[in-house]
Length: 351
Image 1 (cartoon, rainbow, N blue to C red):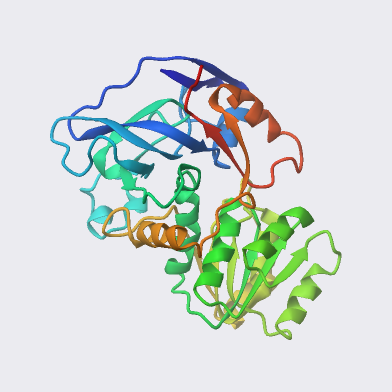
Image 2 (cartoon, rainbow, N blue to C red; image 1 turned 90 degrees about the horizontal axis):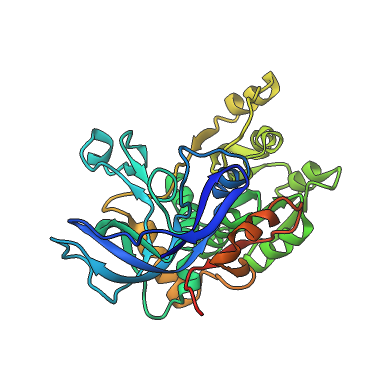
């Protein structure tokens, strides 16, 4: 088979590899499309990987083309999407259904070979059915869509409230959509790029605020008359913005960190006073799983993609490139502002 194999920093090669064979309890999927996640970019461009050589990629769609001994849940010909987390299913966290908290987990596309390839082998529980009414391109975006929804579930979101989403990357855009679907009264979107804010408006954000404006915090405060937002979802991973999150919350606000910072952070007393005096709840989310595995996040994503309430079109998909151009695709991420949404790799080899 052909695959895009990473050997080190800035060293991703399109080459032939042995086609994997499914073992007991495993299925092999012929990959249709695979998305480039923000976590893949530093693995290829900055050497931030567990091991090399490695086939990255964990957001994918395809068709089951072979099954191993004992497989009963899937059949050859099934349309599927990838569920990248491989929990142990035996530890106390897994027993509670907190699969993402498993300390013995593996992960497709980082700890085991991933989907930047013609074929991928994985446990049968790690493929989720793709409804015939949902395209393979949309199927490749299942996983980032579920991450946004998991954040709402984790904060026990209720409709009729004011929410702000910091960061309008793919996960941020899906978070905005879930807030719309679940009945938020106001959805403010915050991002530096005005182009990404336009996408956020298409996804359902009612107010678009650019951090390029010197008075952006004042603009946000004015939206709620100074009361603050009931929910703050930070998908930016920006240390500067994560400092501001606590200044945006209302009394009893729920602050949810979806993005992950890359540097140490220090919070001054004025920030902690806001947390204390307003009795805010601060939490983080990790991936998108709950019981029964992989969780209702995946079921709801499927239903909403099928009925069209969850939008996954050119506004979310930036471009589609052939797998052989994987190196060019990752080079695009070095150009500031070049990538507006998800880049998909078409993993079907023709010619």
